Length: 405
Image 1 (cartoon, rainbow, N blue to C red):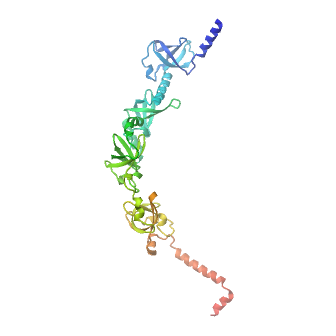
Image 2 (image 1 turned 180 degrees about the horizontal axis):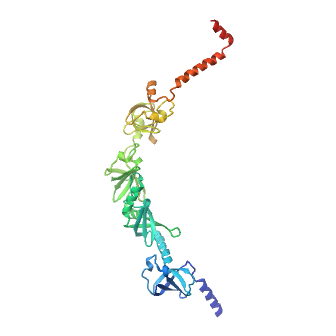
């Protein structure tokens, strides 16, 4: 019976011996001459020494005898019969475990910006360094750079180096050494109660805070900011928001989408859509004078009035085949007024097709220069050829009769 119990104990002992790589807990029993000895389960003594003493986490910065600590097994047995342990490896794992826990609990932490690059900021949290993409900056810190110039974005981001900011950990993968932070999620959490007070369809009053090629930013409410895409500024086609707005303008807009920190606005939806009444003003086949608003490679953008614009496709600018579109388009200038015929209307799609009205052959020839100047000569040659064919096909008797006459 005793031998059986001893055998069971022996089996349990060997089964519970930590393996290399395991994270173990123990009590500090001595700190002497740069070596820390730890009692593990009352059966094994482990030692932490040399470079393995260098902590990667604050847990090991001020340990003393009697403290409960965690360490990682790096060797089963050293030259003194002790288990070789490491604070360095354990600290590394503990920090990653902490980061993963921050994600689970959506914890807000303070972290230091240590560097900037064109894609975002390098962030240090505890003993780890991670990354925060530009897209994860809160809206107030987001770089609104004309044309997305990478160098100007970097210049903007460099102002944060050395500062401590509040962030959330949104991705932590120790195996891949991947650690991603977000400042935007902290902002979203703090603004949630304010954001919840708004709904799609609400009309807000705000101020234009920035203009970019893709739209205008409008600040409103308590620190909120929304984007009005260029297509939502006016019903007409524009090249840049600055054609209509300027920074500082007071405007009214409608909320058309809410997605956490992303708020999308529309200015044009507060104005009646002029295309609803386009059929009351214009008719297909109607000829009307229009002003060339823009010359594109595919044709002319034409203003029929301040609200309705149409397209005269390059194929509708001449009845003749055009070998070089650039030659044809060079005949037109922005601001020119020409007569156009309305050939199609699609109010729901905000489309109106036009055809240039050519005032007779003279006007046509003035607009389109023939690329085949030798064409008349070719026509004459064709006529001569046709006469020869007819002559060859004429019966001999008929030829003789013509000769006698």
